[in-house]
Image 1 (cartoon, helix red, strand yellow):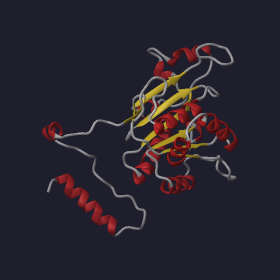
Image 2 (cartoon, helix red, strand yellow):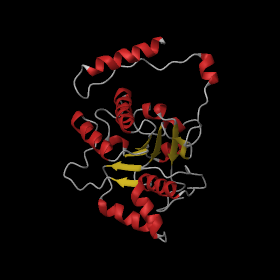
Image 3 (spheres, helix red, strand yellow):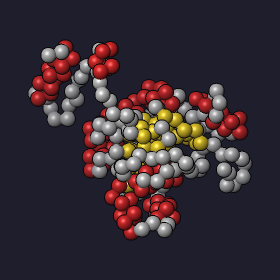
Image 4 (tube, one colour):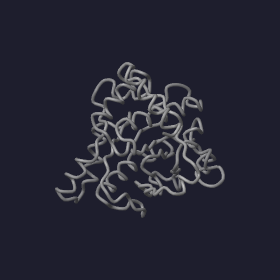
Length: 256
């Protein structure tokens, strides 16, 4: 038995004698050069636009630009097997859990009714089966900050409806501490990924985050300054395997 396998086995044995819910401490995953070369790995399953299952991705944009609606549209089209914005979605319908602190049930109902549009009864039923949304009906539902008490609520929510894709919106409301702190940002991503792994090890994590405001900052959405577009710590940018910067095309009320 390999050293890594022995360490893992020992950790599992220790776990049997520890309290319920205790973490197993595992070694970091390593493989030899040759073993990696010989492995037959399935290609990453792309949800949309470079966002792969098993990874984390971020969408940055100023408040009110439509990040929540974008995510809902991506989920809708993905479940129905339709492209979005000219880019393909994963062919099999995935389970999307939309968690947030800003959009009321009335706003969600308005959007859903619009998006149902001319869909068939069967298509609407498919969306009902595969998309679950936070509705902010309870007194504490808007508090999604990853405090120890709320982490337990997150755990119960994910266990009650295990998703293939978790959408978290907005990033700032998740952070338990200074939004400019790299440690706080990394901890938030790690907590969400750990909770997801418990219910679905291949789940994807999509985070909607605010960008910096003002004309000069908005111009940084593209080009060499694109990494500076997001507001607060840049740790979210560095921990995301796919990043989309969203910016208005002009100063009109309904910009492209």
